[in-house]
Image (cartoon, rainbow, N blue to C red):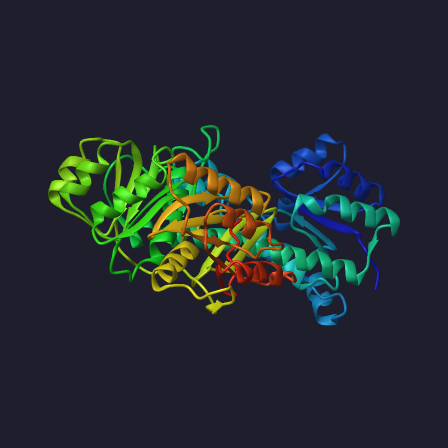
Length: 495
């Protein structure tokens, strides 16, 4: 059912792209009702318009907080054109029929990103806008609604092609978009009131503004140091995700995180041994990293750690003597792990929306030995450890482990062979012997090339998820060369 637009209510914050649509409406003879800044904008175009105040007979009050919240405006939007009683009441009370509502929302998200001043943020919570948008969307059978400047051109094209009319299908489409806009707006406001917003010095780079929205106090207590930066928080998140893998481990676990990747990690009987082994794995990359430990930091560990430069240290506890040493650097960040549970989902903002997924929990689904021999007990421990570490490296990822110490890693490569070569080179750089080592891959081997390259270096155990149509190639190579291969059934891509 085509509906001719004869009247429009226009009240917008963003004027970009509005001029063309207003001119089209004027050419079609549409009566335009408007307010404040939008009225001034339209009048500067030389196009006549009707001030909402002249219809409501009520001025804009409370500093502009109340302008369109009036029965004559909402009656004009919500009145049903096929209900005689509605039409009679509209006539009785002088309510104009409004066929088109073009209303956007105050820039709440933009204000939140640019200031921490509560008064300014609160004033950008739109009241009339969402109400009018919802009213128009509810009455889509009679009213066309635009809730964003992104829809101006689409409506303009429809009006030109259809001689000033819209179809029921088009009005329903605009209504659906309008409800989505209001929903996202309300979510942003709800998040502001229900979570703590922490301003950060800057984002990934000094020219980028940044905030953290959430409850850091549920995860850790900061004992010392400067405010956490955007990059610190990203690395700290990676560290907490990693340490969670070893939450129930009885041995001491120490790891070094750099740009969200594990660059050193080890399990040992004591914290000092774990630190020494983790550092030995890649002492070069440890500079400026984030350290994480599942044990208490003692004086002995603190004295050893104090010798290098690092940004953040996370541990389950700190002895007072350890704190006395570590707090000598005023900017060094010390976080006490409260060992709470993580949310069971990951979120990432992309394009004009949000990706949400369940967290990658678990190490493997199955443990199927399909090589030329089964793993020894020591090799099983190393394979388990290697697979858990590989999960926390950017794809394509390879982790090489020996005696529960990561001795080589390749990450963020566009080829699995490149990731393997990087891992081998890293191990050689710090003089590790690869004979008898375990190799973990975050995804399957599409060919047997990686297995052959690794075997040539002395690696004898492989753990990977399987799932390639050519799994048999790698498995057969292991069988032919008496190598162990574990198929886990669980891929660990990390983008």
